[in-house]
Amino acid sequence: MTLMRGALLVAGKDLRIETRSRVALQQILPFGGIVVVLFAFALDADHTLLPRAAPGLFWAAVLLAALLAVGRSFGVEEANRARDGLRLSGLDGGSVFLGKAAAIAVELFLLEIVLGVVVVVLYDVALHDALILCCAALAATIGLAATGTVYGVLAGGLRARETLIPLLVLPAVTPVMLGGTRAFQAAIDGAPHDAWPWVQLLTAFAVLAVAAGVVVFGPLLEEA
Amino acid sequence: MLGRFPALAGADLDVETGEILLLSGPNGAGKTTLLRLCAGLLPLRAGRAEVLGIDLARDRKRARASLALVGHETFCYDDLTVVENLRFAARASGHTDADADAALERVGLRRVADVTHGRLSQGQRRRLALAIALARRPALLLLDEPHAGLDEQGRAILEDVVRAAPAQGCTVLLASHELDLARRLATREVRLVAGRVHAAPRVSAEAAHA
Image 1: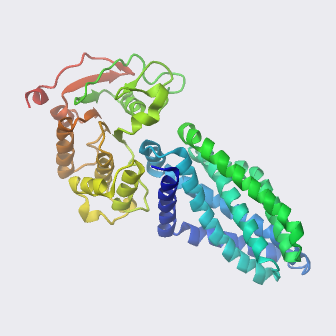
Image 2 (image 1 turned 30 degrees about the horizontal axis):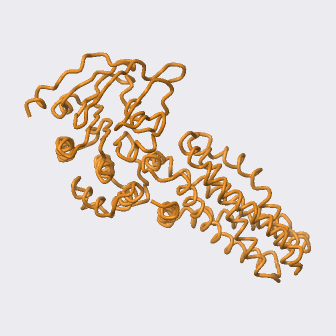
Image 3 (image 1 turned 120 degrees about the vertical axis):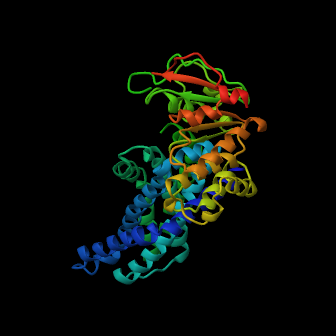
């Protein structure tokens, strides 16, 4: 089986599980929404600060929700030792990585669309450059999903998975938080020239994270 | 390894193609460890193990392509249906939906094909695990306590599968505490005690006369 066919098989499986269990819809999405609303309550006293802080608050909410998505993705592999089934299947580790990362990325994209609407409405943010927003969101989401997937498999087999994943993932995705926030801020300010270097940083991070994941995921799945 | 102690030590064993080998022994003897080692799910810390002519220390992933394990757990996803779990496992191992559907029929789970794994009874889960193993068309079938949780019909299906295996060129390693049932199937029995092959191999009378 080719790398991409295996990846599609795994991604389809993960998305079907999420569609049926509705954990993403009923838990992860509301969690992201609650975080955004709490930030609004916390900063509401200063009406000028909220729109300015919106990009950072948006990406902080996405990061926190992404931790749940990653934990959930590897939680289903631990139940009934499905992870051993993946190992026995003969699927290439790179395929499993790409499939799981793609499924997480799709969930995060949908989450970002909903949270984006909430932020625009609640934080009173005016968007000027949709192309930059889309490019930055695409690159940031891929980098976030890929990094989360690598650390997810590393912590997946451990009993301390729920606490270990945030501890491992959050420092590693600092470039996503930084690049996403700066690119979004520039897009909101209508300064595209300031945004593109951050989009390039996000793209480079995403490419590195995906490449590293394809290489290291298989051994981590075997040994972790 | 179990802590600082080796789970298996001195387990010197050769299994011929087409054999149905019963691994018996008390709890903690190393039966499950031996099966998981043969399946390539545990690393070999010392010694040498070959499965289907493939050195496990060198290429356990290649060895896995030709074997199937029915373990204590089903390796399934609770939110996928029986047929979805089965087809995913078949496709992932390079087999077809037709292989999956044939296995589904063989274990008698057609009636619950659209029920999610999480809602199956224990016995139905065991049958599904067996179906997943069959869909892989293995040359080596590893069965760890396969009778557990199965009703009479399930046990009959299991016995049919195991008895038919040698004719299909499939070797079976069977670990069980249900010795009366397992000895009816086995062509040879090996007793493991504290990680060692403890008793001389002997041919089970009923299977030898079959």
